[in-house]
Image: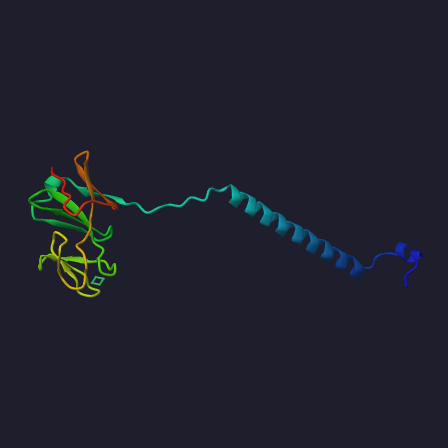
Length: 162
Ligand code: FES
């Protein structure tokens, strides 16, 4: 058992290196805890913003779309058709189980590859299990450009006269 006099003894190299190691370990733990606290504080200050996907898409000038033409925009999941009555937009998402349809120009139809539903270029069901026509979407003319809003459906007979 060490006596009080032992404390006045010289510290040998082994004892000194152990103390240095424990001091460094303690400082390291404090540094890690401080860094974690700082990161958490900065993260707390950073705004949590939800970036919603764009739903309004530019189609182009009406004059660039001749009557009878269907404009397919697969990335936006939207079709725009220029009929005798005017322009209208409709979704490219199948009304059966939600697959993405594709426009088959040679066949003059919209086709769903999942279960074979077929739609006319006006979105009417012409075959397959789809229960409803392709819903029409809001289409407006802004500064001479057709703009479709994929987040807003409109009446089935809605047409934009230009
Ligand atoms: S999802 Fe289109 S036919 Fe089934």
